[in-house]
Image (cartoon, rainbow, N blue to C red; front, side, top):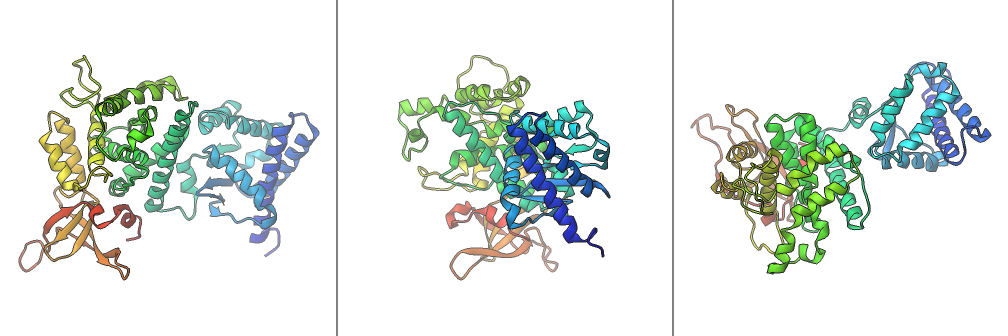
Length: 480
């Protein structure tokens, strides 16, 4: 094989292109378009592009902390590592996932490439860099470059991660986005939500692909980060319920944003009150009861378009209002609470009551919480929505810890989506050498004994997994 086509030679050309791309961007930052250093940098970059576009298109993906060139993980050398990593950070911080260059660039002028790179730099200041840059590319009719969103980038990866990795990545990024928005609002700064919108879109895709795994991630409970984890769980549960109701992808995205920001008003409350281990006094309780109004105020401060604000600010205001219009904040209107508000109400209560808190000395199991909620159907909760929610979670919701009549301990992982074919997948838990629980056999709780025709195992009791120090999501994130 000649050096021209050897893998080593190809990788050297790819690395050269990335280094020159970084250096060209740096030159554009410092100088005007007519500057000699800029013209020279663009010329060298065009030459490098010609070398790699001679045979086919060229894709650069930026995700999961690294580059994927032509769909494979790219490993760069120590000498150029700092430059290429700096370029990676630049893209990652702006939520850009990469682009594909097509051979049509071979017939373009250097000025066109310079114009694209200038747009690329300007996009970093936009509320949504991806959408802004996509619009500029379309307006300029740059047929030789295609901007990739996250879904398109993942499809091009040769080692695309499975749903477990997607779930972990989406959940972590969701928490990070809520923290960042909350921190900036708490400091009195303005902040956009394009990154939060992106993670919610990923959340919606995951829910549509694997509802059970999404519900499993919503079992994560963490006292230290309760407000943030709770917000993400409410978003996940709301999107799952909305998906069961047949909402469109755009509607699910808006619903997820509402869930993510439903408690944003708590930035207006003294953190000592939020974290108080004992009972709140009357004055403290009155301040807490005002947080739905605060959520509406904070959402209106966000740097995003008016249309999106108008569609997401109402339901966070309503999430502590009951189906019969009792609850808080007190309203004079007798108009029915919005669909999103009724969904958030159910998701918020379910996650809050199933979450261990420092002031609560006992744990309600998910099964117990659903029974409690059923008692308030028609008064606190929309009866039809609650019925769908309970059907979605199952008699023993995903993440429930079960004691079986065989003396085995099991964790509910998923339910059959087909009501006429009942099936509940349970992972049995074994005690490890250090006393912790490890993943054991995976069984179907509905499996019948062929001799007797009755279920091989019966549920004796259900517990909250925190009783045994178990974080259910840890088992969902393990390979089956």
